[in-house]
Image (tube, rainbow, N blue to C red; front, side, top):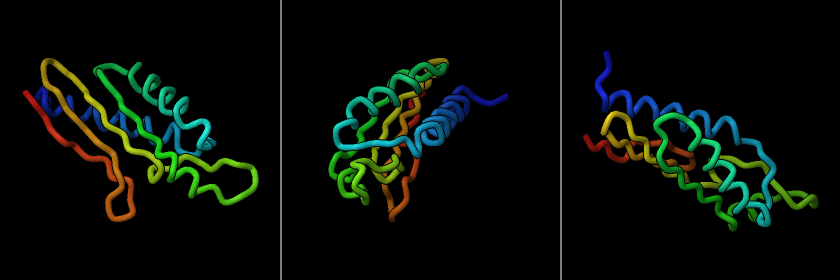
Amino acid sequence: MPTDAQQACFEAGIKFGSLYHQFAGTPVSPASTRSLEVAIAESIENQPYCEDVDVDVHDDRVADAIDHENGYTELTGSLMTVEMRIEHEGVVARTRMEMEDGYPLMKLVEVVE
């Protein structure tokens, strides 16, 4: 059986996979970034053991990514930073997704038992 710390890390990975693959490709414009942040966070926070999700869709990156006259682009990992706090049986796993070397890297920041 996995330890509580391993289970917390597993749960964090599930949340990131769900978040990224559920919302990648969503139409986004500078006018809709705040509502999209809330929708993403509240959706993922519904999942078991997820205590907090902070989504920052960067307005400047969204504006720079718009390459047609329709005024929006598709959400990708390069347009946002995400932090999550997962708690399982008293263990807290903190995670972060941010751009690293041109790639939206999801990483485990800290595990506190």
